[in-house]
Length: 170
Image (cartoon, rainbow, N blue to C red; front, side, top):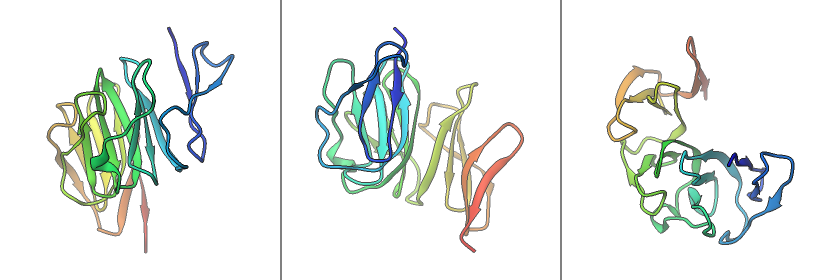
């Protein structure tokens, strides 16, 4: 079944079992309000939503209400990505976190520099943009190598095949 997702500025979760022709509100398990900063669907149907408030990542496994790991409750989330069943990575104010159990438990896998962006490319390589660095992982985000060291005032916000997109606070 193809499933379409929609994340709005305030975390109002909607899902569509009809690939976008019909939408339904799905708030079970959400607490308060949060600003959604990223959304990803894993190949196993798990939905991950990173938020700026109320916990870094909300997770919804098939047929279950939204949940989150209390270990991430105090962290702001900036992005989330998934390329393998039950595995995802999340960019937070405290570095990159990774889960291997569909978001039940998360573990930090980089240093504590703020990570503002994470993604998997079509070859399955994971990328992360941190303060002053671009990181790469060839093992689903378990280990990371710095591929570019930048001025600490520059934050990588995304990449394409030919360029990195960044932002400078200066």
